[in-house]
Structure formats: C-alpha cells, structure tokens
Length: 441
Image (cartoon, rainbow, N blue to C red; front, top):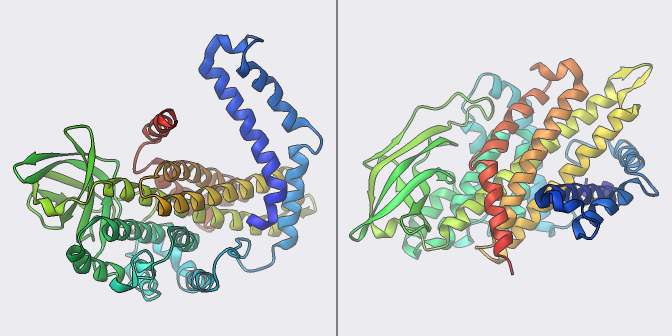
C-alpha cells in the first residue's frame, strides 16, 4: 500500500498534522497565543493555507481511493509492498503471509467465537521458525532485524491479532534475553524459546516494585490481564527500584510468591489466556536480574510488537471494508463509488501507511540503539489509535452488518481495544514521551 498512496497521501497527511499541532500549541500557550507578535499565532494563521490551497485534501483523497480501487483485485495483503526487503527476507515474510491465509484466516472467526485455544495454530507458525526471528543462529534463531520481525508480526495479525500478540510477546522476550543476560543463561533459555517450547510473558507497565535484600532482590506487586500468562514458563518482569530507576527480572513459573490467576474473559483477543499476575515477596538471586538497560529494551520491543499487531489488524479491517464497498450497492452503484465512502477509505489507507512507516522506523532505531525507545512508544500509540479508527470505520462502511458476527470487522473492532489501552495507559505514555522531548538537547 505504501507505494500506491505515498505521493498523494503525504501532502494532505502532513498539512493536517501541521494544522493539528498548531491548534494544540495555541491551547498550551493559552491566552497569550492570540497576540499578533507571537510565533504560535502565525503558525495557527498560516496552517490552513496548506489544507485549502491548490489540490485540496478532499480531491487528493478521491485520487487515492481511485488508485486503490484500480489496483485492488490482487489477493488480500497484496496492497502491502515488501519490495524494500532482501530476497531472503521477502521470501520469509511472504511465506508467513501464505501460511496465515491458508491456516489462520479460514478458522479465525470460529476460534474467536468459541474461545478456542490457538496453540495448534501456534505450533504451525513455530514450524516456520519465526519464534526465533530475533535470536542468533547459534541458539536456533534467524537473526533478523527487528524491522523485519515487525513485518512478520503484521502478517500474522492480518489473520489473528491474538496470535500476533502471542508471537510479539515471545519475540520481545527473546530479544531481551539475547542481549541482556549471561552466555550461560542464553544457552539455557534461548533454544527452547525459539522452538516454541518455553513460552515467556513480558510484564511491563505494571505496578511492581523491587528492593534489595542483601545480595538478593525481592519483588512485590501486581499486573492485570497479562497476555499468555496462563501458559508462560518464564516471566520477564519490569520493576521499579527504590532509587527511582527500573530493572528487568526473570521469574520462573512456580516460584514461591508468584501467583497467576485464572484466564480472563476479555472483549477481544479471545483464547490468548490473559490472566492477572501477582508477586508477593518473590525472592530472586542476583543472576535473575537482566543487565541494566534490559528493562528499556523489553518494553520498547513489546511496544514495537504491539504497534505491528495494530497495523496488521488495521490492514485486515481496511481490506474487509474495501471488498465490501465493491460488493455492496446503493442507488444503483457500488458504495465505493460514493464520495463519502471514498474519503473514508483514503483516510484509512493513509493512517495505516503512516503507522506502518512509524513502526518500521522505531524498529530500526531500536536495532541501532537499544536505549532509543521513544520511537517505539510513539509507534504503539499511533498504531493503536489507527487500529481503533480503521476498525470502527470498517464497521460503519459495513452498516448494520458490521455489528454482526457474520462479518469479521466486529471482531477486529473488539481486538483493537487491547491495543488501544495496554499495557501502559495512554496518558502516562504521552507524559513519558513529552518528558523525553523536554530532555532532548
């Protein structure tokens, strides 16, 4: 999709972003922002010119939609270009797409409705080796860049967001272990993790504290609705330290003081086995702590995985809406020929492309610097909101049918809720991003 809409989409996307930022700047500065001598006043006054000038954004949207409709006719997913990959990487990503189309898409609705355990599907994905995407070959992995792994997660999410969250959690844990523990621990943990024999649940954004007890650490706190907690044999727990810092700890399932609740009945991502995790005085040796910075890498990789899942979910909803708009007719013509629907489709496609590029860029930054996590947080926020917006608009394009289980868009909308609200609340995440911007030179 990137190549289809980029030339037309970015001017309108950028101009509307400039308008939105100018308005927010006015709100932040308050009454002084209206003074003609101020910079904010000029920005607020000039920004509309980019929206209402020659080639209005509405016309650009219609052109975008026309291009999409002309090109659509290929199989689902074909609107997403992977031309930037190496031949080997492209072959792997397309192999995952084919596996998802063959094995996941046909059963996803039934799995969701009956809350079935998706582990058989996971086993089929594990056969592709993708759970070892971020581990090195020495430990049974594929040693792929995080950006490529994010594309794989996106392809899985097009078929099932629940499977994508399962995969992305395992990948984030694998990356943290691969880069932040001793060689002996890597050799013990990574091979079964890459084979899908030892499931790991990252616990981030929760109210868990860690304190020193001699040479040991003691963890206490709780984390609600942790994905795959019921199956996890290992938890990677980000905990707040008494000095205001943070650290990541490995907690084996069955450890004294660790309690995993019953699987929660959630609005979406059904069958994932999400459950509350409670730690009460869990005592760990010094070797259980990842190296400093491991907590940043774990949360950032989790954010990239959530962002990629949101992009894949939004892509699936967009494709469903586009198909339906070509099949459903009103007033003697397909609804995709009505201007109101075309504007919606163009906005959906643009938002997805922006979220995809933001996610890829965040992954590249994290690969280059394991502490560069701001982009990952931004990607999760933007992609989560995109998934919500696109899935809701897909339901609206379907009309009343969009609220029935006959069509997949109601499932996509339910699944988007988890990506919109977790694992860290959006207000807190925005505060952290703003704090990073204020710290920047």
